[in-house]
Image (cartoon, rainbow, N blue to C red):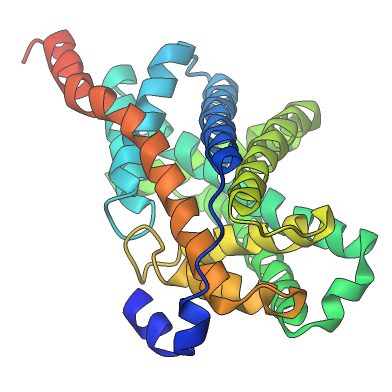
Length: 302
C-alpha cells in the first residue's frame, strides 16, 4: 500500500523532507508520553467494562494484557491479533473466555462510537471544513460508522436477536455475553456515561499525540482540523488491508489534509512518524507478552 501511494506523488513533492530542529525531539517525546497516557486510559476503560460485567480485575493485570495486545496488534493486519491475545489472557485468568470476549468487544465499541462523534462535533464548530473533498469524505465516514455501529448494537442488545442466543457453543456463549453486557449498560446509563468519558479522554490523548508529531515536522493547523480528521484516520487505519495500517493511514492523511496546504510528502512523513511513535510505545508490551503467558501457565499449574 505504501509503495503504491509513493508512486502517485510528484518526485519534487517527495523531496520536501521536513526541517528537523532540536525542539522537534521534544515534540516527539511529548507525542510518546501522550500515547503512553492513552494506553493507561484505555486500560481504565477496559477495567470499567470488566467491573460492569461482574469480573473485576487489578489495574496492573489489565494494563499488562492491553500493552501485550498492542505489541501483537502492531505486527499483524488490523488490531484483531492483539484483541485475540487480550481475550485469551484475560479468559485464562478469570476462567471465562466468553466474558473476556464480551469485555473486549464492548470496550472496542465505545471507541468506534466516540471517534465519529468527535469528528461531527469538530464539524459543528467549524462547518467550513465540510466543504473540502476530505471534509465530505470524513463526514460520510463518520455518519456511516455511526449508522453501522448503531445497527450492530441494536441487534446485539435486542431480545429478539441477541437475546435469543444460548450457550450451545463457545461462539454463541461469547455473543450471548456481549448481549448481557450491553443490556447491563442500558439499565445503568450513568455507568455508560462514565465509560464514554474515559473513552473520550483516551481518543483525545491520541489526537494530541498526532498534533505533537505534526509540530515536530512543521505541520501547524487549527485544532478543529485535527479533531475533525484524525479520528477518521484512526478508523481507516484499522481496516484489514495492511499491517499496522501502513499505506492506508498515509493515504487518509493525504486525502484529508490536501486542502490545508499540507503536501503529499508531508502527509506520508506524518503518517510514518505516527506509526513509529505507536510502535515504540507498543514495545512496552514486550515483557508482558513474553512473561504474561508463563505467569498464566504457572497459575494454571501447566
